Image (cartoon, rainbow, N blue to C red; front, side, top):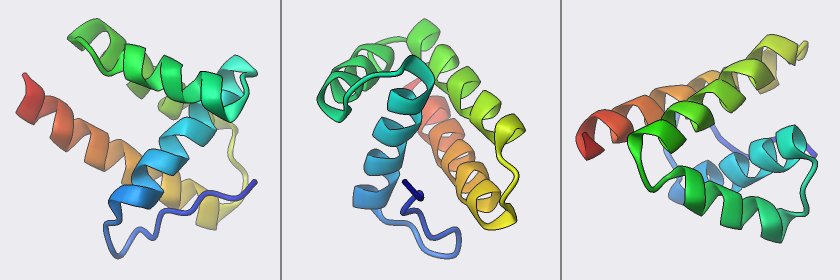
Length: 86
């Protein structure tokens, strides 16, 4: 499944959906289970660091430049949100 994020324009819906997709891919989970895992990861700094690692690894595996730019946009947003949460 292709990611929904548009690197040129922020959408909270796409941002959250893509995080669920990336966690589901990495952990081999259903979307519902991935959403619960994402909520768990988002609770503290250790979990958020793990989420960033999951997304970083997805970027390393991605071969499609368009999908890679989406992953990079997601990383940028998570980094901004993480610094705000800290």
